Image 1: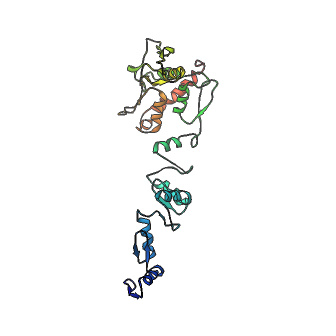
Image 2: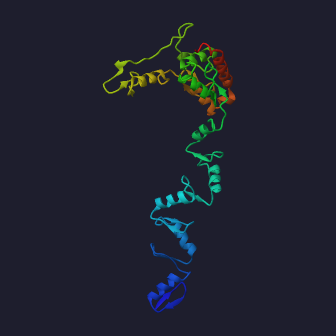
Image 3: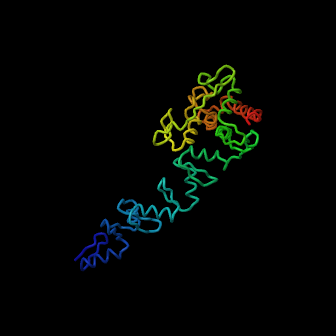
Length: 293
């Protein structure tokens, strides 16, 4: 005789007992783990919680491993990979993105970004902000979303007017006579005329393998690439300073300073007169646009 303790029943043989356990709603057996649960809910909970099982409780389907299960979640459900949570519909998933501190989410674009800074860059881009900062130099008129973007455009040397970083630096130093955002100890000047120092590489920079920067030993495959490096701000003194008391930010370009101010990381935009300086620079560019030809 075989006995089922849970049901308090005797059976003629073990085979009959096995058949009973297979058919009875009071026996819910995990064959892999050889565990018998009194309810289907208990067995289902076991499938969900056990690391031995790769089980989708929404589809009542088993998978080969956790990787296959996650692929299933991604393809067939509303799944947050970062939090490893499944939602019943897309609205629930989007609401999770919006409310969770683990996500950096743009609601209007329904995009999740990897970091807060990436989200801020997206929100400050032309997707969300109008290009209403106009380049004042002759022959350009291109619009930008911020003053820092305009300054970077002018510094890059790609403005049709021919203005470049040295033109911008000269304008800033003319406007910022009280050294509100510039450090006079780091500025190279000679009397009334500014002495411009240009580093220019020649074919003698070739070391047998590449064109080598004699200042930092960086390698470039072309002489043009090396000269672009030398004409950039990479080796320039950090002459620009944040006017916010207690802020140690310094940069070699005014565009980098403006990016720092616009980020709001130190409060300079709220608590200093930097906005006026930035506006004065644009006005100065407009007045000087003929001489930048």
